[in-house]
Image (tube, rainbow, N blue to C red; front, top):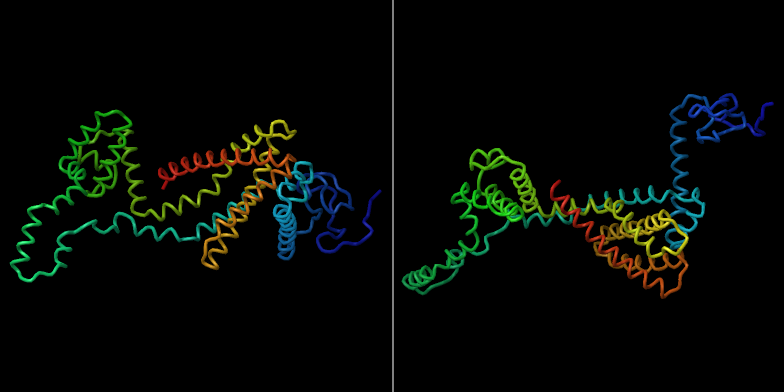
Length: 374
């Protein structure tokens, strides 16, 4: 017996387009099934028109959008309660915490990428630096009563050898390296591995700055440098550091743009410490991880708003929004873990200390990785 719907649908969902098997997963269907109960695909055999395609796109977007607004409202107005509802089973009402955090990280990354305020630091690169001190130019600015007095003052300065002192102070080590690069490299090659690796980086840095060395094999041929992995790594790292020295602002921008994505490697470790602190609570490690995802999502939202305000009104608002987040985090811990004020405050400061330690470690690793890949 066929189960016909009481109302006649239109468009793609007309009865004449209904199928008895899902075109996506093959699940058996009835005529009353507007969607497949197994995979949720629309039960329609009608060929897609351009109008159908855009209607489907907008329907999917609006469906996600409604979840999005419920998630945003719950995050902003109910600190900690959204996590409690999500882990208790009310998951269809909110967006997936991981996907939501990833979306916010991408938005924040795009905003940071368009922010070129750090590019102005490129003017401090070594190619753009002015000489520290030029005594001859300073001397020319002085006024004397006669040429004889001028010559006498110049002889006095020459006797003190001040110009030579400044020149030697600035480039003494570079001069030693450039005087005989082959011998200098042989000497440092006999030191212990940690010291000699750093000295090799300094050696290649000087050679590249003052000589036409563009790739490692040039140095091997010109200065009789042994061709091995250690020397090649020192040369490559020297070039990376030199690029950073030339364009420090670009490096800072590149580094900051990667910070949002370190969250996904950082939070799982931090959630382990939350699990240890609240080990007596009947929460799984995944519950704590979801709690971390929700809080980090709120932080990204505040930072996104802060960056937009900074761009529009040309003032710094990060401190204000960070203060809001610190208060929010305390309320979230109180609402989710249901503990007293004293216990929550103690655990709040302990976990924030752990957070900063792990954060510094993560940033250190990020900087090291950025240097090698810049």
